[in-house]
Image (cartoon, rainbow, N blue to C red; front, side, top):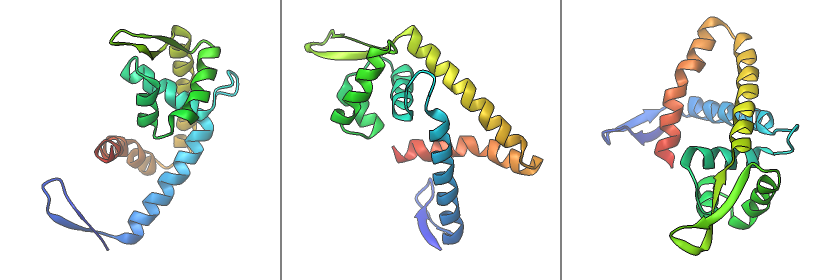
Length: 155
């Protein structure tokens, strides 16, 4: 058993074998979804799609803030962002609060790329879900809110 605390701080026991099995399943799902995320047609890898999605979700931001949210170094993300800017998916503008700094914003082309990418990945995920039993499909679909909460609590 693995010990933890629940929402109100009470100690709870979790079955270690099931926790490990969930970790493995989520890791495999992440790798699978990462392969689906890369946009081969538009030459944008999964890191680029993820960065673009964060800018669309959160609005204009500095490169350092985006790197922190993506949990990568600014130097690493700088190359990815340069490609997104070069392809017209992100644009750099001056930060109105600090003329020395720049802000990254999604362009209409970037927002469309993200919509297209999500539609493609959703179709692939739906195809996979159709191969599950009704009970399995329901379990996976109803897990989404709890998984969102799990990730939100971790950040």
